[in-house]
Every structure is written in C-alpha cells, then in structure tokens.
Length: 199
Image: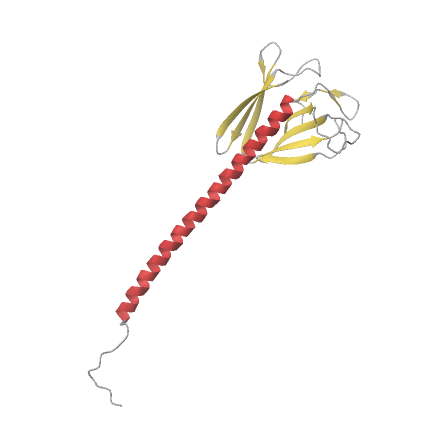
C-alpha cells in the first residue's frame, strides 16, 4: 500500500488544542465559581436560620419563665433567704435568677412544681440553667444553650408604683415586679427589646 504525499493530515493542530484547553478551563472556572457561590450562600443562610432559631428559643423560654414567676424565695447555704427574683449578688456571668412555677411533671414524681431558673451570659452565649429543687445548694443544674453572639443583656423592672428600676432590690423578698423589659444586644441584629408582663 502506497501513501500519497498529497493525502490530507487528519487531527488537530497544536494551536487548536491550546484554544480548546483554554475554553474548557474558562468554562470549568466559571462552573466552580458558580458552585462555590451557591455553597457560600447556603452556608450563610443556614447560619442565619440557626441564629433566628436561637432568638426564637430565647424569647420563648424568657416569656414562659417570666410569666410564671413565683413569690417563693430561695434559702441559701447558711439558711439566709434570697429574693424570689434576684439581679444583684449573683456570680459574674449570671444575669437573672428567679423561682418559677408550672414545672411540668409528666412522670408524676414526688416533687414540687416550682423550679429555680438562672440566665447566664458566658462568652457571648446566653444559657438557661434550671434546678428542679428551689433550694438547690449542691444540686447540678440542667444547662441549656439558647443563643450565641450576645454582647450584652439588660433588664428593667416595673415596680408596683409604675416606676422602672434597673435592679430588683425590695425589702420584701417575695415581691415581684409588674413587668420586665429585656434588652439583648446581639452582634448581628443590634438591640432587641421585649416587654413581658408578670402574671
């Protein structure tokens, strides 16, 4: 079999191969950039959703707890009586502590329906600590993280004379305010205020 010197050469030239590789690389980069953008957007959306769930959970627990404040003071280690609602003389990270009623008892155990609750701000995370025993002394609390990125939390208390107080200090330790205003300073959303009446 003789090959004619004039027969056409089949295949791609080097230039055509380089051009096709550049086009393929450009399309691959565009596809990767689009996929990366979708993944970043999805992650941000999930973070926003978790933060919003945390805010909703926090407000739900604060409202349920405050609406069921009980006038029962707590007895401390040496028998002294602590206020039913306490905002001063707390540990550094605790911001609010009180006794609440309506603690569910689905197993019908022999215990009170009262519960001692403490809200704690620890390194930007707001937590709810709860004891089934009001005079907890050495009992371990159940700790529940509520929300993160909290820079500060503040409370104001509406007294019976309709005057606002920043600390709840009263002579009668069983006295409760008429309402509590909560201000949460969040890293992302700024100040969030909520006014909850005490029943």
